[in-house]
Image 1 (cartoon, rainbow, N blue to C red):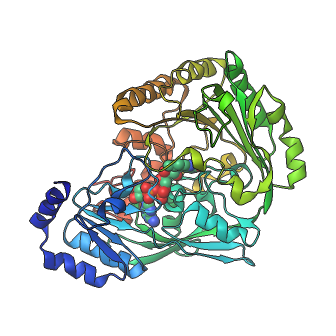
Image 2 (image 1 turned 30 degrees about the vertical axis):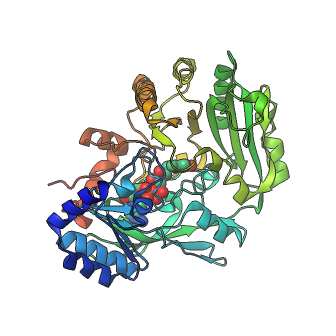
Image 3 (image 1 turned 90 degrees about the horizontal axis):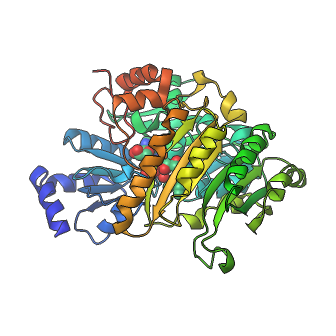
Length: 478
Ligand SMILES: Cc1cc2nc3c(=O)[nH]c(=O)nc-3n(C[C@H](O)[C@H](O)[C@H](O)COP(=O)(O)OP(=O)(O)OC[C@H]3O[C@@H](n4cnc5c(N)ncnc54)[C@H](O)[C@@H]3O)c2cc1C
């Protein structure tokens, strides 16, 4: 029924011969509605997403990407781009009845250990990049779940365990190969199309399909000191923990990048010991980007604070620490997230946080705080389109749950939470977290602040028809 419907829509637009002409041009696979692997190919990480593109071009080469772009443009098809497929709103497959340019098999990474740089194809995951760079004792700052795509992450910013020392992922993007709306393959770096490089550092997928990302690398690991401890958050403990986190993270050296999360220990025996199931917790997480033994000393206050429920901290391989959250975000669960840049984190803000956090309807949900400091804060506004360095903390409540019948309660919880925190923010948010497409000129202007105009001029230059619109969209000026 589902397949019949989508085939009909496709048939109404394009005949078989036309579709076959695209298939013939590709070295990779063209997946159509009705094919045996169609449902697997249209599925993304978030189980809430149920989109029906007509065609999925699993590109195996840059030429494939060019062919797919030219085809979609010629036939006026909506076009979505899939990197790692981890965008919470499901933007990777958002082209109902249109074409998805799926980069998932373009996932090779090449490292130049002398120059300390890496070139990664547009479909690589954080895990792919980490594995290749760590073979040389190097790393690029990435996010904290290894299955996330480097593409969406970098194009939107990229907060992770190395950010205070080395900046966001986008700050370390030093070059890119991009397929533009008119099917050209262009290079962006400090010498060529510098304006485009600026836009790719935080401006999202608005300007083209990035087939290759080039990163600056740093010596990291192979072993690092890593803190990942759940303290009891019963009663006043949560408020005290947030106060402690605020003070600790803002005074810590740049080597330390932190995350705090409040939640309820889920009843998952393979992850957590049974006696602590259903207990409220506060997670204090941190990595030390430096000598490991020294790191353990400096991070000790995070361990000593409060009453530990369970402690996963230690000196461990960097790639292992990079996977610490992986098991908490399985494919196919239902997810709805939002974010807000907080201008302050005083007691009034904390009380409001605690009030809403305590009401989480699902044991799988968490409320996360990311300290915004160090190299993130120092990053120059003129070097990147990313806007959000002015924040004191990034607030990111995550509703994560299992059953469709609980959709309404979880979504409502999160929306009320964010709405009630807006007064503590300048209205800007981190565009990599939202769980539905956040639209509207006003929201996008707030998200990019004084950079919006420059981004719009860049859109006018590289994508004046808004061919790449299924993203956090910056619209051309006319
Ligand atoms: C489990 C999980 C953990 C996360 N952890 C972090 C974290 O630690 N830090 C952080 O900052 N963020 C984090 N995020 C948010 C993450 O950065 C975004 O979800 C991001 O969009 C994921 O990128 P992707 O390539 O996997 O997504 P996709 O869904 O494939 O794409 C996301 C967007 O980017 C566009 N796009 C994808 N590839 C390309 C390309 N090659 N060229 C041009 N446009 C492209 C798509 O069209 C889409 O609009 C996390 C998300 C999840 C689900």
